[in-house]
Image (cartoon, rainbow, N blue to C red; front, side, top):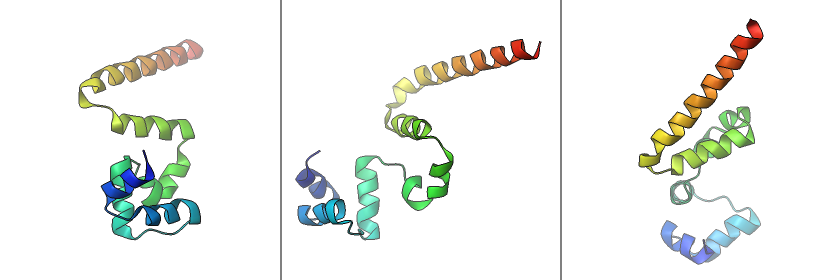
Length: 97
């Protein structure tokens, strides 16, 4: 997304956004919340970073993608997860036997 477009969506000047990106300027709380909403970022990353540190990078990516996924596709994703968990459970049962 173009910086100017994002700035317009958030309601700030593009120069302010450039300062946040390039100079490390700390945005005001309302601007930060708007950036998180518009970009679909995980709020936990910014307001509760301990939770994010506990998860692997891959889990964080999958979690973020899941939040962006349209509702109608969630049953497919849930089925894939259920299948993976069942495979893992079966493998553990074979190890224990």
